Amino acid sequence: MKKFPPKNFFPGIGLGIAVGLGVAAVILGDRLTAPISGLCFGLAGALGGLSGSRLLMAHFDRTWTPEERKEFERAERDERNVSIREKAAYSSWYWTLYLLWAVFFLTLVLGSGFPTALVAVVITLHCVFYMVNVNRWTKKL
Image (cartoon, rainbow, N blue to C red; front, side, top):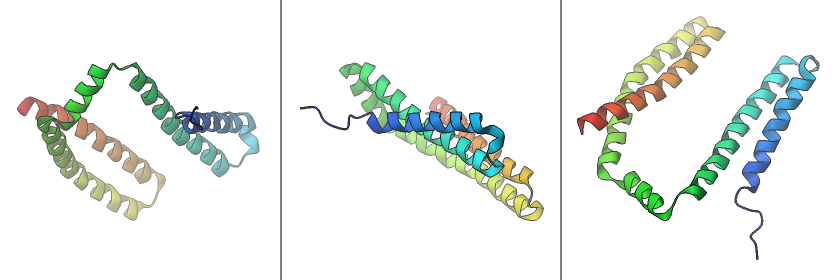
């Protein structure tokens, strides 16, 4: 007997809802107020990203051979790789911690839209610094 709902049922529904919200926001355009339009696009982006990435991960998981799965699990638990990720995260956090505090105080002082956008850029930089530090610690260890 087949299991219901299937494993990818809810991510598929989520992706369909995301596409529907995005298309509805585009079609309705000027008839929607700016906050409602932004909410529709934001929800569509978030739900589409989550659902789409889950579906892609499930697809690639099905294409791996048992040997590749074992190798991936071994690499995830390898002490060297764990140590590299920990050191990179530690270093990245201290670099971006000061940036986040500075932008936070700037947002408090100015209270405009630009600092809010700047906070988004700094958070993105946090992720970039993390990846750079993973690469740096990979070379050192």
